[in-house]
Length: 514
Image 1 (cartoon, rainbow, N blue to C red):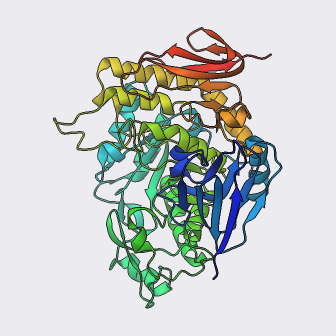
Image 2: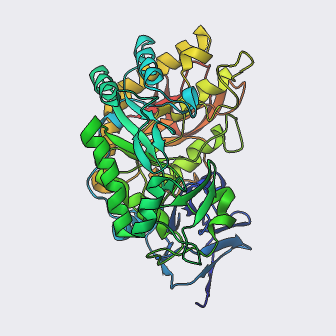
């Protein structure tokens, strides 16, 4: 197939967003050299869309490569691209492309996802979740004054990869566990993935039925991934999808499971070279379709979470950012806002900024384990007014009383504002608009394109978390209007103002009606 090349000169003052969510921290594009091949999504969501603050956009029905250099945008694609202009600004062009290419479906995830936090067992239990540990975790959440929400039982609850039933040893009575969690006020999601342990009975069954991804020689492909080497269900094969859904439905019917965390499923990241071997799918119109087919499985459930996705914009899937480092910068706290804003601009409004504090490094049960308590608090504050938030490490176990009090107060604030976030989510399900919005999206033409450290919740709440270690204040850009602060202050914009933000404060401002 011949590659087609396109060259588009940038307009004066033009900036662009789009492509891969992991590049949000590098947006807006156009001010410096940047390139991306959308066949590599860097372990997160991606969409074949680029949109600009000057009301222009590029779309293609398959992945393409693009580069910003020397005041021009170049695109290399195996298919024709669609390039349109004349839509005035970022908001109007987004409304056009979203309704044309990923129209809102009018559905949202279960309401509890917006009203209460998610709690993931991963950091607390790593690969060793048990019935006793999960129940203790749930009870501790409530005992420490945090609201029940969605319990995600992560990796290794099952008998084996591909054998999607509870381990008899670690979960002797899963029905009783889930019934108890429901009585406590939790919904329950289970971690699943596309992989099948080789040489298992399930592997042989699926191989005989022709449901596994094949290598070039027709034998089952064995893929290297972070948990070892496994066979892969071919989700482009409708029969494989039906088999997998049948396993999930058994979990729903037998135990009362409420939804699933669909992990992996992306042909990118550290093992991209391995994934690009000459595998043979049942149906593969373009390299990322395998990821898209996997994402479509989640549409059958009210609680489905994905870290990697291609397509399925405008649908009721929870989209989590890629795993974050417990760091202030470098895929840490600094990336949450820009990557979250890009998720919204790519049609993924029901987004979650990974686990509070990032993925902890080391054994949290070791006496040598240390945590940056200030980072944990600021991480929570930055995440707090995203559509969906997720804990894993139990904050009452790793924080002192002072820092845990800061977190408890923040959760109370979240509970106070959660009904409004739910209303924005309902509106998003119908309109397709992001829940958290770029300053340039809400206030176009005001030179806000480069602001990546504050955001709008809907059109009327400005959120400005502190993102720097040791800072007890920050500069905030206020658009035109009267802004009522959480601290009782009033600011008249447009203005840029230095504000105080001690460790117990998440600065946010509500725009008063004119």
